[in-house]
Amino acid sequence: MTSEHTGGCLCGSVRLRTSGRLREVVACHCSQCRKQTGLYYAATNVAVDTLFIEGEESITWYRASTFARRGFCKTCGSALFWAADGADEISIMAGLFDQPSDLRLAYHIYCADKGDYYEITDGLPQYRQGRPGLLTAGPSE
Image 1: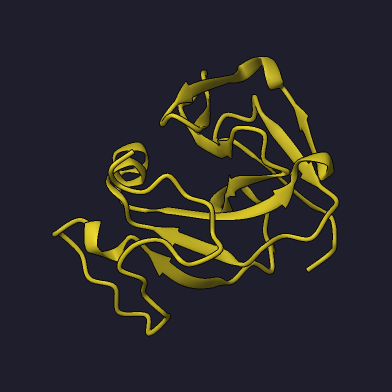
Image 2: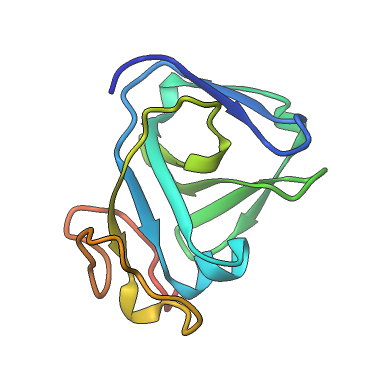
């Protein structure tokens, strides 16, 4: 998927545009993601140098682990990003993108840590922990 995508937070203080390839959507069920979003974190990735942000002054960053941080809108609280220190890519919440996004959920990670109040029944692959080759913090971080 290589077309331009736009999106933003709930209040519109942060708007974004991507011009690069977006990764498929990954659903993370770790305790950090559940606590931040209330359910699970559904995100895609994009190369940092293809992400353009309007309203950066409205983004607050929270150091979520020893090597990553989470960005959210300081006005409305919308979860926006997960970024590993020094990485060439950044995770962006899939729900931020304007429709139609053409994004597709591909698989679930950290299913062993998912909340006990829901089931995963969509038939997509489920990984007990992270998926090999996918950089994540995991439930213990």
